[in-house]
Length: 487
Image: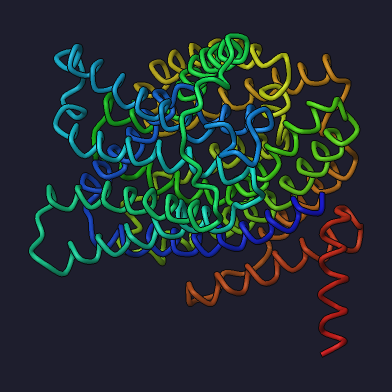
């Protein structure tokens, strides 16, 4: 776990700095600069582009990790990066052709934003390919800065520029692909900096057997990504289609708040993926189980801490943000999505274990079932419960998906992420939520936020350290004490 801890810790720091900027964006800049409808349209464009990037990636993200050990060499990795770029061009071309054929049957909101969506979607695919490619070399910090921190800063700057100038809203929308495109260009330059921009096309290395393996894996990856997107990322699109931009804006604010839980997840998943792929290739299940259990426990601990601080301060948060009253109807969305994300963090890398094993096809079966469940749930629950219905549909999808994956991993590999420390973490979390009920709210909202964060967060951290729930947390604490003593 050494490299995982070091790289994921650094990337998590980047993630939390980005999260802080994201909080500033969500709570202050976006709510100040945009109306609910404008914010809803911006979020619709972003999420639709990201959704399409998943659908038309042609499974290349997993290919970038799964097959790198087979291509790795001193001779430009046998044209591996060139192959990834061909997948990129294929995905963009496929979407462009398909859109030309069916655009008349697509929603009005989609067609009126198609130029911005297309540019953003293309940039997102390229950036994610390079992000996964660099993870093969244990490099996720700078790519995380570009994909996360840079994007958030850029979006906040164009929002402020719009607010303080005469820039039209339609022109502002083009700032979105400019930011994502700049991140992709930055990643290309970084890959060159680490001397891994080895673009070539060595088709002779693509033997019939190897090509068949890649295309088979890609085929299942395409269908799996479609299922995953429909199962977990459909909410924003359907809220806009069934309701309107204004309620999409409210949902987006709630989604952004709940999404703070996932900051450490991206870092740990990014660095764990190549290691899991290598361990499975060697059939080293002991190493896989170690990462599975430790990542699940540590992610759950971090997730509980963040969820406690969010939920116990939720009313104060809405009091602080500009126009907060407009967004208070999203409280239930934060709770439901927060629970969904906690469950996802608890089951950690189960998807990677399946995806990088010989059983990768089963990911597809689970995803397609859940895609149907999520579509039906959204169509049923949104008209009845509006925003809460969309969040509940996502919760149902994520929980079912992870239950299936966790059981399958246990059935095939006889490993699971559960241990008694998870139960103790849950009990500490429940105790702190109950304690919050008797803590007074201070007259000043900012002081109340700081007071509860220090008290409740401090008690949680002390509980984790005293009961030694995480060896990694105690190790970091011991190292910190030693540095303080030496100074």
